[in-house]
Figure 1: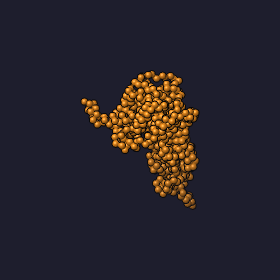
Figure 2: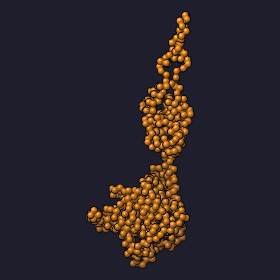
Figure 3: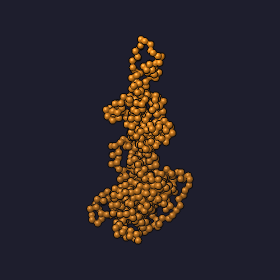
Length: 602
């Protein structure tokens, strides 16, 4: 009964909206699926199979109800590279392992971690991919029958050799496509009844009809088989697995980043909240399944997801409907799809690639940080000139080094001289004759880890006054410590103890305290009683220790009293007088000087 009520409610409130959104999204996705497949160096049907299978599985299991999954421009370059190195067989295996990686990311709850990849890297390789896609479509733009190349200079060289035989009709179709995609949206939006028609579909129908009706001789998509995709086993060998693992990991990372970025965009457009880990698992499931049906790796597509939302999608069913409609196209309209001119697809991909180069992000990064700008342009250049796997790897290493460098600039050690001498802790120390000149107080600011050791060493040389017997290290502003920091702190404490000093720690948070006392050497060097929650507590303790170590006032008075007056007559007895007794004790046991505490351990 509950299920029937849910179905009935859906049919009344959301079905029509999802049907419309799914249909329009499928219309937009159709030429893109074919174009991305051709640009990736595989047959057009593999792109269509990907759009169907990934669209249905991604929407069914996804963590974002509005994301549309399928072949994308970002995946094109890495797929082309993988096909060039390992063939279609290697690509299918790489897609399978990429899916397994993504499922593992989701199960291990790494969804939030993937979003921490720096924007300069994402922008750099996304823009680099845009340049490669654009350059890769120049051959189709001119109507040249040139196979796709992995290296951009190979593409340019091949075009240079064949450009003299360019097809004028193909150039015209490509130019009209680009102009139409840029201008038609504004024109159609002003005409009632047609504002929801995708401009790409208008140009697709017009260009294909013109080619067929007028008998224009231009390169076309070619054979697209009808029927359902058949199940096939993936060839798995140890050598091939080892070879494709770097590409598989890059596909997984790239797909995860784009899927999560797409989910964030969908959240902003619909005021919803996606589930990162579930989205990664869904993307993984799709990529694991597709190789068994001859489909290529996929991810969520921001542009198609935005179309889905703008066309009124209410639930995840719109994405499923989009996949079903594409399947119907394969079953019943494949003979017509093979008539699509490649110049039209080139125009679409050129517009897509230009939009992948975010000039605003480039300008923002360049204004904010020269180091980030260096990472951006290096990743951008390496993506174009080498390959995406190497570019991402170098970009990540550079980003990690920059992060460490920034952490080392965060850490600082301040001394008592940095604060007002008449307020707070300084006032307490300076107004106490016992504490003044006996206690050095130092505050560590920032994470205490191996990257900060050079700063720690330099600050020690500059500020630590070895002659002061007591050292208090304030660590309230230390969020975490690593093993390197613990070992270096142990060395410092051990050196101070050898010189007769004592080190106290204050303000440790629970994580730092646990890290320190798990170390056996630190536990031997520092008692738990030598660690205080507040610096004032440590000062009160030291003041009490030094006061207890100082001599009583009466003993001091007796120690400094003048010698007794010499009597002219002998004493009545041989017993010593009280003054003799006191003088005798004073000589034998001189009073303790409060300043002589450097060798004492309270």
